[in-house]
Image 1 (cartoon, rainbow, N blue to C red):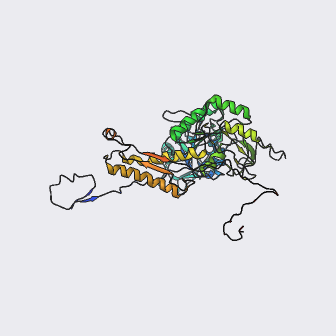
Image 2: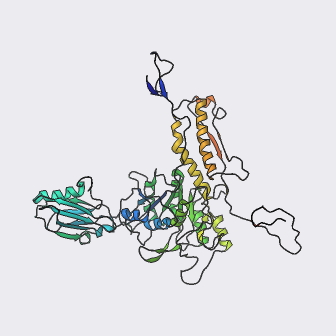
Image 3: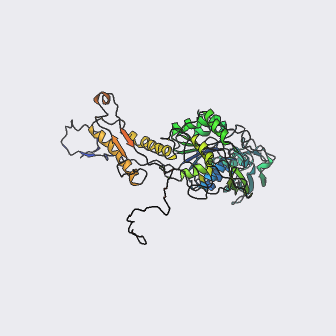
Length: 523
């Protein structure tokens, strides 16, 4: 009794009398939406791999891989920290440099044995290597330590002369079994050392210093290059990010480059103007840069005061991390408009914290910004006295596509279909295939409707899918084409809420019945 998968045998050409059991796979493919909370973050750091995306969920994760955040422009950790405070917890972090970054190097005195920090950066200058007596008689123990990381211990190293130093290097570079793998802090080169070992404790600060490669960093450094090995922003390709931030990249010559990347990858790029910018200058610079895209959100250069707990200083930082973190913590059909932001102490516009002088945006100021496709973080908000994103728009001048919700929901739909519908390629074109394609998309859209991501004001179905002979004539299917046409109506965002009230002694109130709820009155 053969058991086969459907399609693996020709059921019209069987010869042997027998029972044939075919395993038929589910006819309708179920689509599961892709994540919309992944933030791609690019910037400088004092440790960690360069140009390699690293998964980060918390600031502890960040510190383990990239070291502490640094109080300087283009610092990646600063933007991660402000985003985390808004609820973001899923990052792909890429370290960028100006190309001058170097690793700390230390040569054990009186030997040619060299330790080199695994990564470039100034944090490597704090590495401490210690050689002492091992657990077993006649053996040695090497300890490698770096602040914020667990010390690495290589115990029971034996040997004499050249063999000993080679054994030390092998322990560091290869590890000592499953429980003590290769070092994640240093690499070792034994050279030709043959001297008798003596106990020591040396800090890498006494050797050749490592550097971050951040002094000469520019916006172009964070944009990077799109050739292998990719660097900067382009290292985020294929990482599944829905939001992208290049820390503090306030250079308008790089605006459209970021927007183009966002379009190609389905990312919502969060841009920023320079600190202390003026509204007039911001509007003219955006127009001159040619930025007009739903793939990018340009934040006005009104930078924010933020309390840096790591460096114990009140700093002025770009608004990118706050906006990105808030969006990442919202469902894609939502807008950043009128949503509270946390840990904002003040802004350049509002004045120096503690000065007692608070300035706010006039309606004319906001109108000039929003008409130009520039958003801003300000206080107050329509809902009260708190900090938040004041408009919820991207940089597009097209009113039909300029909402945060359009960018994020469109990217979500496109990415989900791209991730799941490819399984139908290679299938035989017939009525059954049309039904499966349509059913798959309808099931996914119905799920979005039931979860509130889609909806309509009158209760009608806000989507339709066509995949049949009406849009797949034989002249097309005979050439291998199959087309599915879907329409999805998004929910609008309440941006201009008008409440009319008529009051006065001469007002004639029409009789009406109020809802019959506890405490209500009937007129």
